[in-house]
Image 1 (cartoon, rainbow, N blue to C red):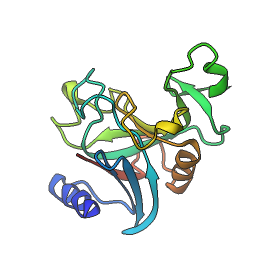
Image 2: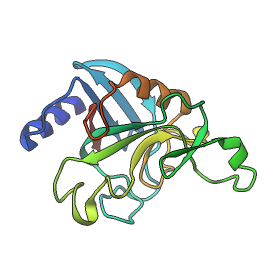
Image 3: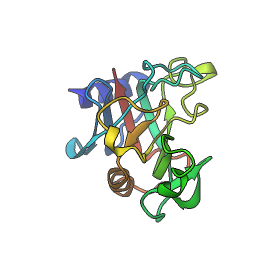
Image 4: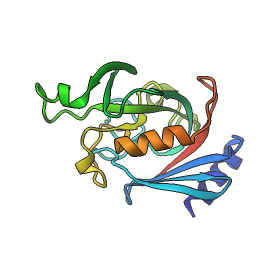
Amino acid sequence: MLLAELKRKCEILGVPALPDALVASVPAQRLWHFREENLVAEYKISTSRAAPSCIENSLGTPDGLFSVIEKIGAGVPAGTVFKARVSTGMHFSEFLKNAPDENLITSRILRIQGEEDGHNRGGNRDTYSRFVYIHGTNQEHKLGTPNSHGCLLLGNADIIALFDALPATPAGTPCARLLVSL
């Protein structure tokens, strides 16, 4: 049903469908990966602690249609922490000594861009400018419950599997479409 919604949004917006489609449900705290309409995998996720929102500084997970336009972190060890989309070369356990409750960006990053002008793209609603990603987390025990500052969080093994399953494309070229449903 959500895959049909993704296809419908693509048609309405004139955005070409791609072989790889990701569908995230905020209520279910799940993300499904489809390829050519066949289910490839299902992942437990965490969306925002704050109410879903596309507004800048809301800390809410944005909804609607997106494209995955950049894959960051190929080949780094699982649990590696990223700061400003750059690998620190350190495992999250090294960071947690000084900030045990910090929710870190780990393992891989899938950078997303909104496809709906005025909703999740442009102005103070621009998902790309808000630095909202799909990424790994050091707080895997909280997956399945809202726990992010707007991003979609996956377990480290899961984000690596998803990252590896999506096709390689030049940065800025979509490798998958994503629908985030409320």
